[in-house]
Length: 305
Ligand SMILES: [Zn+2]
Image (cartoon, rainbow, N blue to C red; front, top):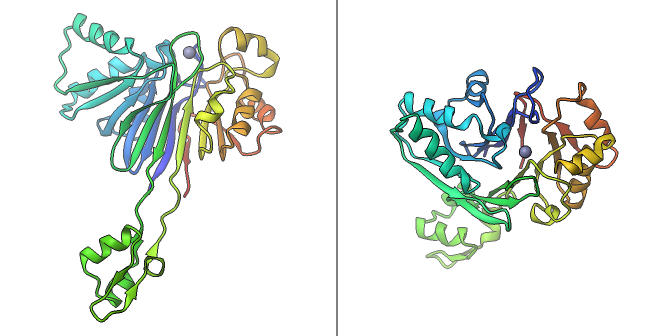
């Protein structure tokens, strides 16, 4: 089952030719979710060959321009290209009004339904759930209302091995009982145990997106044990004071959160335009947390089972 993250943009607030503003696609079981939508995100869909009509939900962390200014443009293009499917949007409460005013004042009428769900910047809340996954918003600490998002796969049910279904001529009702972890008695009196015929599915995987935030130790417990953590790394330690003043983090602080949260893999992003060489972020974080990667436009990161 697919679980991967595709980076469309990992630059910070001011434009550069090196990085696009924040945007990424999360592919979880072939359902596509957009996380943040900086200016020009719709062009990134084109560039990397993703149809944006396949996006079922958009998650916006906060209302700084580099995280949402591409949203109304993308929504308009979805309409122009014939979208009928409902679009779910999750974000700060003010985002709903912001979208509505934009659409109203430009006399734009969408041919599809938009369902808005507000996030919370005071507690971790479940914002979206379906048969296979859950998404939580996670409070971050920034200059404005800001949350991260935690994508969690649900535990898949036990699976009965095909060979045993044939061997024991199992009925659908018996398969159902075995999947629930129960044993069944065949007509001839033989007992088929769940342990014998079922395969245990791999543990569910988790991905946390945390941008933008000041160094926030409380975050560790809310995202504990995730397989992949995208954490902002706007600055290096040489600008630690600036990081604090602007409610951002350094590469070292991001790595420290990764250690505290016992994550498996750290992905750094949201790089300030003042640095020309992204490798510096890697060099600062690596001594603290071993498995660290740098985000880059077009990068696809798989979250393996
Ligand atoms: Zn910001």
